[in-house]
Amino acid sequence: MFADDRKNPAATARIRGSEKYSTINGRADFYDTYGGTIIMVEVKGIPEEAGNGFHGFHIHQGGSCTGNEEDAFADTGRHYAPQDKPPPEHAGDLPPLLANKGTAWMAVYTDRFYPEDVIGKTAVIHSRPDDFCTQPSGDSGEKIACGEIKEWANR
Image (tube, rainbow, N blue to C red):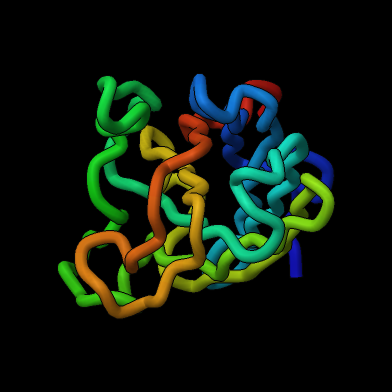
């Protein structure tokens, strides 16, 4: 199912926790494949106060993991939704991450975008799972970690 380059992703995001969740670190890799993208995510250091269980995982339209006192990642903006569809049809709405003892790993295929479409956007982890209904963020809670999606450097 992978395209020709099976070793390196087309894009990647180094995920880091907010100051409050500074132990969180990991990455999301975006592989170009026929008809869409395979996303592989590995995150470690999710503290117990962030919860074992499901965490919303989205692509946001903003390109910077910066923010303010109220929202550490406010500059990530809203969920990536180039066709202005409602949730759960936002291109950036992805399955939740399942954390177990501080670690989460996921692989998912989407036909809603290609890796080049999300370069310059952000990958965001929330404190709660997305309900895929409530506007604007699926009631997924606080943004606890973020990574800026960049083109893979070794292409």
